[in-house]
Image 1: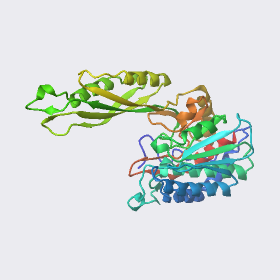
Image 2: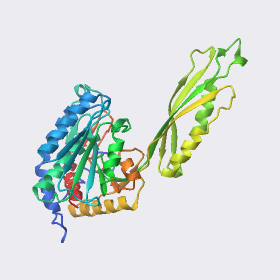
Image 3: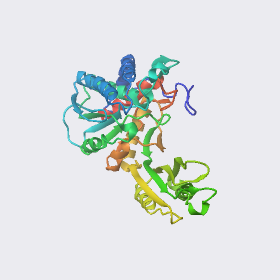
Image 4: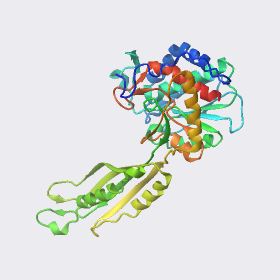
Length: 400
């Protein structure tokens, strides 16, 4: 099944001649990508078979060791950023050392949302024109595409600037340890290409920022029949709070505030002394982050006998559509046209590590990985027909 809006074969690039005067041999890159497709799939499968849930350091490190070994075999200068609780972060540099404005960061991650053992019921396999399995789309196929693109450039003598491939270990759980590494390396680069899955067929030029808050309510317990008036219901206060924060949503601004989980109370005949909720916030504008944070900090209980304890904050700033990112997209769009297909841009409510680099003011283009569907779902899969054209595109962007 192909997703809505995507026709089978839509991204099968035609063998068009290279644009006159183009410094990048697009036709040759496409032919090379098609020739290497079997090897690309083999690497993607090996990465998928190395299950790597974010919260299992040993598993993530095993997958990281596989990636580091492959990077070294391609001539990469590999550095392992050791971590205690989370998986180690893998950094590999390719090509000659170049000035900041020429250096490119290829940004990805090796951790997945899938627990060890998922392969037993969700096997990695190639069938019906797809690569199936946990982590295929998000984002081990994208990592394999990056290695293949670098290999292509090496073979045709176009690896003429420094490419830094950074593979993080905790992206799916907030990038607690990898964020400072990402930001430090990104600050030394002129552009960032993120290997997250495409949005349909489009590259991503904007992403919402994310925030999470937890609100705990302390009330006064009492017997619901005998001492009703002596109690102060934490659940009732929580209901008021939920209504208040939900009303902060502003769809025209791209701001959403959603209470995802809540609970409280002990027995039906007891006035609840405790209640809580967890809130997801999405922001399209950086300025909304501080504004929402102030609103949460100012929350007060209506019933003076209740107290609120509010914790949380914005953990990923938004990736806004900047002129620098648009320039990268226009360049990719021109390459795509020369390869014979249209490349759209898209914005998404989900966040990635590209949010961090964009917030630093570095042009960041996202969604440059695989095309497929079902990220984080049982039908997670990659469409094989798009692998070669997308890999050739990635190589062309890296070549400049």
